[in-house]
Length: 292
Image (cartoon, rainbow, N blue to C red; front, top):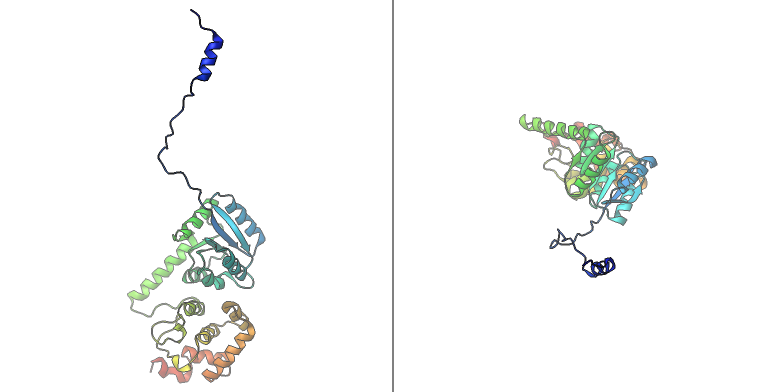
C-alpha cells in the first residue's frame, strides 16, 4: 500500500525536531570582559590619534582620554582612574618624567616615547614606570601586549630600555664588587624629589644615601624643611627657577620665596655658594664631610 505524500509531510511536521546536545552544558556562562581603560599622553596630536585608533580597535581596550602634557595627563587620570597610562617623555609644560611619580600613585604607567637616552630610561624606572617602549622598536601587537602586561604587574621593555636597565645593574654590581660608594644617579635631584615625596623626612636625613648624596655630608645643621631640601637639591643640579616650578608643581614666585629662606639658612648670597655648602664642597665644609 502506497502512503499519501501529503500525509507523510504532515506527520513529519508534527514530529519533534532533532536537537544537537550542547557540548558546554554544565559550564558557567561566559562573563563579558571589562575593557582596559587607557589614557594616551603625547604632545603630538598625530601620535595621539594613531595610538588611540590602534588601541580602540581592540575589543578589550578602550581609550578614555588623551592629554598633551603631564599636567593634563594627571588631571585626566584623577578624573577617569584608568588601568594604564601611556606617557611620552618630552612634552611642553610638565614633561612625562616630572609627572610620572604623581601618575603612578593612580595607575600603572608605560613610557611610550622616542627618547632612548640611558639616563632617561633609568630615571623613568626609578620614578616608578612599569614599562618603557621606544617608538620604532615594537609592533602594534607588542604595544597591546605591553598594555595588558603592565596592567597585571608585569614589566615590559623594548630592547633599548632593556639595555639601559642591564647597564645599570652591571654598574651597581661593579660598585658592590669593588666595595666602593654606590653610583650617583644620572639625575640626583630628580631622584631626591621622588624620594622626598614618598618619605617626608628624607630631605633632612644624615644617614645613608639621599638622592645620590653621600651621607657624610651633615645637612641637618642647615635646618631646611623637606620642601626646602628638595628645592636645594634641584638648585644644586643646575635647574632654573622655572624648571624647579614645573618639577615641583608650584609657581615661580613660591620657588623664589623658598630660595630666599634657603639662602638665609645657609648664610649664602648666591646659588653657587649655597650649592657648594649643600654638597659639602665649600672650603669650610671639609670637616662636616668627614674628609679631614
